Image 1 (cartoon, rainbow, N blue to C red):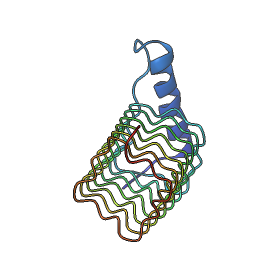
Image 2 (image 1 turned 60 degrees about the vertical axis):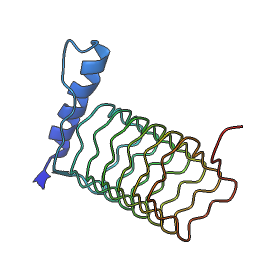
Image 3 (image 1 turned 180 degrees about the vertical axis):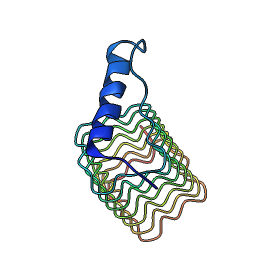
Length: 170
């Protein structure tokens, strides 16, 4: 794990914002691969398209963050707060989301193949068309979640709360 100072992170995030503000002419996409950022506050941060694979974000607050199309392969988000975050089309293959708060999060079309979401809070989350194949959802709370069109092949749903979960659109 590489350590990143607050100043370095601020510069990376500024360059990332500049990249989108200039329609990809200035700045650069954030690349934080392998960084140690546990318990960091990134509330509402724009990390769309960012490379965050292998990052330690355990216990971090990413509530309301924009993580559209972000790369979070094997990222540790255990105990993190991602409530209301937008992770649509994000790549979360083999990510660790144990006891993570994803309530109200948008995970539509996200790839969560073989991710660990045991005991995660997914109340009201949008998982429509998500790839959840081989995902561990043991004891996860999926109350009021939208799983329409999701691939649940080989997923472990033992003990999961599926009350009012949408499995297909009418």
